[in-house]
Image 1 (cartoon, rainbow, N blue to C red):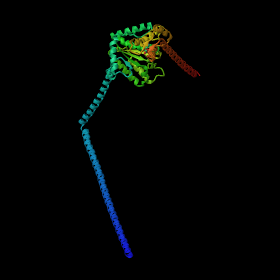
Image 2: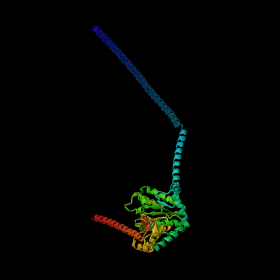
Image 3: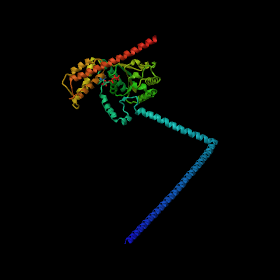
Image 4: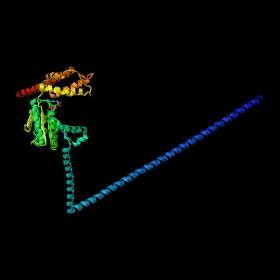
Length: 452
Ligand SMILES: Nc1ncnc2c1ncn2[C@@H]1O[C@H](COP(=O)(O)OP(=O)(O)OP(=O)(O)O)[C@@H](O)[C@H]1O
């Protein structure tokens, strides 16, 4: 029994061993097959890539070859066309030069073309200048009442306002709203009557010089004079002309061309005229400014039916003598006296305080006080102040009312603003006298140095 069971165990063991061996052999065979398949796949991919690379290389070589061929072809075509053109032109030129008639016709043709081009250019320039003189406002003109077609498109609202002003202008008195000493008023009234009659009778206008401290009503009167006489006005500033350099001459001619094209007559107001009408002998004057002044003198050499020249200056003693020679009338605008200041106070109190308070549209009310007595009091306080400074005081009263909590303007507020203005005026006068003293000192030291 024992023997047979041992035998059975041994047989079993052998059987298991042979199964394991068979299994190992099967696995090894599978692995070998997989390896083989993988290698074959790799070889195939490699062969494919190599074939693709070869095709790409062949294609590239082909395009390069094509480009090269095309370039060569182009070069040959261009060279041939140049050769053909050259030979055609050459034979043409030869034929032209050998035939005298053809030469004459060609020369005539070229001359006619050149003449046409230059005539067209010249005519365009002249037409443009003519249109500019008629329609456009010269750049030197700061403000004008003259109606301009070009400006209708640029500033329609301003032009509409001008048309409105035109309707009102006939009713206006030359001195309305201007407060002046009675003697000066009388003189200016004469000027206004004479100008109006000159305009109506198409006579020659007289040139005027208005001189005096700033803010005394020179510009204001010039504008009103133009309106009263039915003329247009244009305002220039001497300070704009001086820095123009060599363009100054052209600018001056433009202004006078434009002035001469006026149908109604033009009052040409030159503010701060001394800035460019200074003595030609002065060393401070540049060559360009001298040329500009000469152009101005040339255009104003004779009396005109088209424009009236009004010069305004604070220092007319600086004028070139030739400028003085062109002036027919000289009017001095002085600082307002006590009576005029009182009238100015009332005028601007009414304009800036009473009228808006009466309209009731704005946030401005007036406290109960005797403003007439207050105006007299303030007139005494404001000695030496100009019309402009008093007009500004009116604006300050209005601003004080707007700035207050309830919008009520009291007597105290009015007086305070006036006292502030007086203080500021004194400060300005002090600065002015310091400046004068300073320049006097420099002058004395310079003189001493020269004498030493
Ligand atoms: N005599 C005056 N009567 C009424 N208002 C005046 C008077 N003088 C000046 N004003 C006021 O001052 C403002 C400025 O005046 P305007 O421009 O006429 O002075 P100007 O003498 O031409 O000064 P500038 O020399 O500085 O040009 C006017 O718009 C006006 O409100």
